[in-house]
Image (cartoon, rainbow, N blue to C red; front, side, top):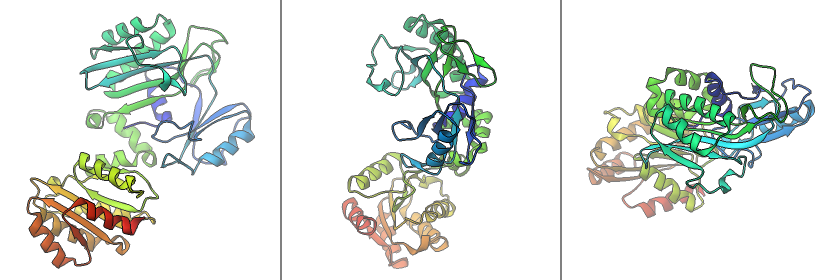
Length: 383
């Protein structure tokens, strides 16, 4: 899971990596300083600058105007509840990252001498990236092969400690400002313009491993301290299954199982111009005879006034569809989601009997075996 920039930078600071002085702001009426500031939307998505979520402000009036515009807006479907307001940084813009490369079974260290918003245009080849073993010495050796810049290598060594200790999947700094003058968090103005002996993290993209959270109490505490910024991650921690909000203004609520099949269904719907509210892997094998998980999902979906139809798509192998059908009926009785139409496709173990039982118990539900007609029915209600 991706941390918002402010939380990512807080972790960088813990490991001795300088970051610009800044403050998280949640109120547009905040009293802005007179000096220049950068205002950044705090959402768990990349490309904020190109989406209008970053503003360079020359004075207090511009800072407050930027806060008024960005707070409460949506960046790539994510509501903006907070902004990071920080001192601008200067210097040469570089790119530095450590990535868990699962395909290669190793870590990948990458350095670009030119970073910034167009970093994707750089080719990732043998001169910019090195694979290495997951230990500090190997990471430092890989970075030494990529650059002789002492400031970059110092930050890289600290980033290696952070990456390994926090069990991250990605630690990326872009841009990494080398030289220049900065107001650094926890210190006075750092160094002088043109100096090449220091580097400051202008941005931070840190991706946590959700499977490691039980070994990282500090990370869990961080997530819970900023609950409005990490609702999906906290749902996973508290409920034990994956529910990810895709579009708060969508019209289709999904009750699905199997990550791959669920993603396929989202793609099929969006290709037809429909807008799913959520991705879901309910993990039917863990329902254990209780509708509680289904009720929780229906509660979350009912919070969206744009909800127009529920689409249940369950492909079961071990799970008995007859049991699932009864739990679905119980859940809908407990939380009917405002009485919106329900379309259900049940396929797999015991599905023929399940469809027959559900048709008798809930004749108001449109029940299907095949995917295409079920999607067509959903689209009738949603588009």
